[in-house]
Image 1 (cartoon, rainbow, N blue to C red):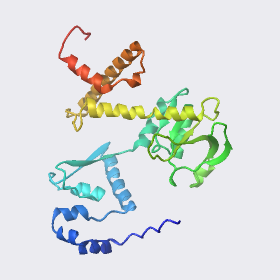
Image 2: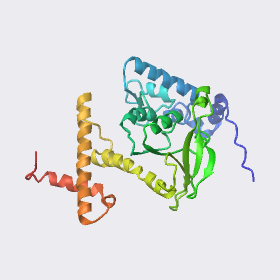
Image 3: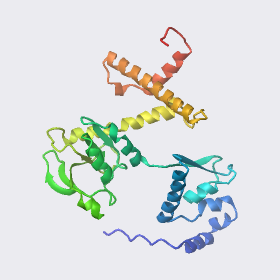
Length: 309
C-alpha cells in the first residue's frame, strides 16, 4: 500500500492564523508561552546567510570562536540568539550558542600532516567529503570511514562483489567540471547491520583496504566500533572527571590551555594505572571501570605519602 502523501507546508501567515483560532493557543496570547510555542522559522538559505555573515565578521576580527548568549537574564533578552537561530529562549536563565570559525572537516584537514603510512584513520559519517577523502588517502594511511546512506551521501559506482560480502566501487563527485576531471578513486564498500535487539539503520563503511585477505569485512566492522572509545573518553573527561556543567576557572587563553592539559594528563594517568592493573590481573583493560578508578584516585589524594614530584 502506498504511503499517504505528505501535506504541503502552509504559508506562515495561514499557519499562524490557524493556531490563533485554536482555543489553547488563543488563551496563551500576550504571554511568553505563546512566543515559545509559535515563532517563524528561517529558511535554510537565510540560516546560511546569517552564519556566513557572522563568520565573515569573525575572520575580519581574527576570532576563532564566538559565544552568542541568550535567555531572559541577558541584557539583550536573547536577541543575538534569536537573530542567529530563530529561537527565542525564555526558560533558561543562561543559554548560549557556540559558533566556531571552522567546522570539524576543516579541523580534520589540519591534522592530516600528522597522519602517516601504517596508520588506520577512522572517521564518523559527518566527516566525509570528496576533497577530504582524496587528501586523506594521499597520506598513505589506510582509511575506514562511516558514510551516510541517504540521498546526501556519496553514491559509489559498483565494480565487483568480493567474497566476504563487501564490494569494490569507483568514487567521483558528479557535480562540478573540475571535480569530474579528477581521476576516480577506488574504494571498498562494507554494508552491515548490528543485531542487538534495537532497530538500527544499516551501516556503510568506505575503506582504502581493497583486498579482503588483508582485512575482512567483519574485521573492519569490528575495528570501526572501536572508534566509539574516543566518545567514551570524552564522556569520562567532561561528565565524570571535570563534572557536568562545570566551567573552566581560568580567565586567559594560556591558563585555559594549561587547565585543559591538566585534565588530559590526569585522565591519561588514571587510564594508564587502569591498564597496568588489568594486565597484571589478566583482564581486558576495556572491562575496567573508569568511574571506580576515578573514585579510588580521589580517595587516595587525601592520604599523602611518598610519591615522585
